[in-house]
Image (cartoon, rainbow, N blue to C red; front, side):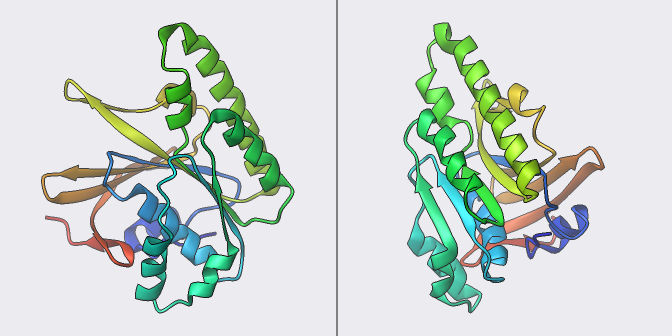
Length: 219
């Protein structure tokens, strides 16, 4: 079990992320998806366990992660157990799962799960191929999650069109994601909504600080 160090979130998940499940963190850009994922990573690293972070956006900033560690009075040496894999195409994103299987990681983070698939198969004539390949990828990821009995975190971009918000590849992900964390920003207010088969309409307000995401009193 991995704690987020956020009281309400851990309470909703009965203490934290459980082994063998896939958790999706979604939200618009700038809502703190990567911050929250790294917050879970810090908890694992502080126990001298290893984390694999698959970066499909090439936006991982080690200096920001160091800032999060320093604000928690944790040593920068924890970075040694954070393995970053930068991938720039879908085939590499698929292949890197083999690296995960052959190592003893306690947490897998994929940031971002669907962007490369949406980019490479952006034309309408590729939509079937995109859905098939992404579906096969999720099957592989799901089997890996179960066989290694560890938590997996995926982040996903929320898009907005004509006042309608939706996640990339959301239909395909429905079959594999066990619980969802949705981050929202309305004006200056950040809200986290949590859902799973056992959780209904759970939410809390938060802010983004040097140490990551912190719960605030609801307005």
